[in-house]
Image 1 (cartoon, rainbow, N blue to C red):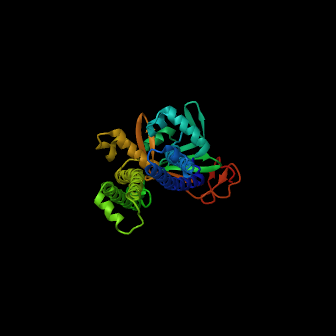
Image 2 (image 1 turned 60 degrees about the vertical axis):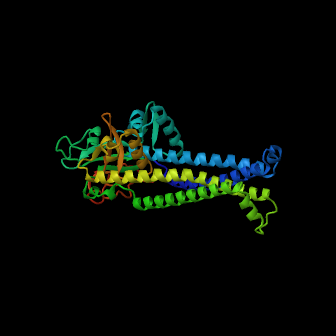
Image 3 (image 1 turned 90 degrees about the vertical axis):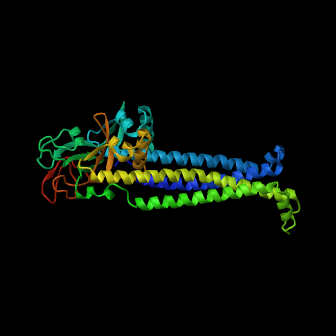
Length: 391
């Protein structure tokens, strides 16, 4: 509701393409530059005057910019998803920067700067005033489905009706020329871990594990190869053997230059493998966190859980790092049907929050063909107030 979903999909594809192209360009450019330095030693005049040098330097600068922009964009898209998830379950329509700072673990100034940027790039449906985000959605009603009692908006977050004790509440919300109902969907399906886990979460874990093994194997093989090349570089017997083997080498100097090129290339590829390995490890950790949290959520008997009670946080000595992992799982959308909630100075996770678009709050029938402010449900015949013209 608060994300520019189509634009974000395009940006995600763009980020992957830019990172792949930039890594390839950096590997080629660095190899060419170091190879020139290896061949010409301290003859900097010759190295700098080489025809390929300006192109290599330009390529390095462009590739560095592409990688930086893509990584920052990926980070910001994740943060925008985190903000959007919090906005989705809000009923007040007024979200303070202090609450968002507690949810994201950032400072209020950082939250303010990011929201101002995200509103122009990735997000929609809210305005910024003083120390809060004002959402387009305004709550018209918060009502208990069991006894019909009208509930104060903030009581919604406790998930319990003060009149009958039911946690089956809903709120009718008007936003962006659409009618929404927000419900606490704590039903039978929420007792299954897959209700809170993203689709193909296990497959993603396997994929990252395979990629990690491939990268580690490649790094180890190339490291061993580079060490053997270094050992052969000053091995006169090895050099003599290569020279007399009939290959197209006419001197020891040419053989050494070829070995140096192999050492340089293997070192560059190993260096390129390191960030990929680190990223795989992070993704696997986030995946494990999402699996543990989804299982814990399924066992919960309340529509919310306190963040410090999560298994990944509770057993960790470093609570801040553990919470960072939970935020990372949320940011990557490894967890669904749940969102952070900051209430009474406590960070919690609201479970089973479900936003239903264009549905009658009485019978859950689809709202179609509404052309006036007030709409008569074609299924139950009840009048729904404040339904605007559809677009």
